[in-house]
Length: 248
Image (cartoon, rainbow, N blue to C red; front, side):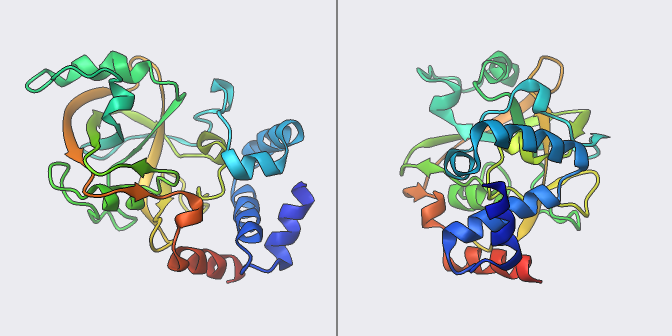
């Protein structure tokens, strides 16, 4: 199956969305450091390529945070998720000290936390401030493929204070096709925008463990409308940009 990904990347018909997904996955493999490639090969031997393209995987902790460790130089990094994921039975928490969310975040099912400072490679701020940002713009900019937010649903944005972060790896993402390897960047990853298909926002990954971060502030936003950003609903501009990138 891995050979099929390679064939899709080298000479497949990228107008076929399934073939293009395979090509993007193989591009992520090529753009990954050799030690990541080695771990990926082990996973694919066990799980198979088709399952990964459809649903991804939950990496184990030994496969997480293997990217370059760097001292975080930004003032703040943001982490985003549904409020009901954060607090399934939420009580009002207005005016609470933000550190009360610390344990809740540590108890999330995910093993790593993807964070971003919402800036691009030129260190230019791309998204609006957390109290004003549009939820759809946020999800697209952060490359949150699979997002399904209903109109009025509460989305919580948290400001993290961190000292050490890791460049994201394909393993951290669960080997999803829509992740971007950013091989030219040593100290950060880049999230692929779900509207333009272009890698834009800087991102990093944190181990989900005590001492890795401190929550400094939080905001609730309401989804302005229904957002279904599953892979099958990505637009033509996204797919065209991805295909162009592979064939350049």
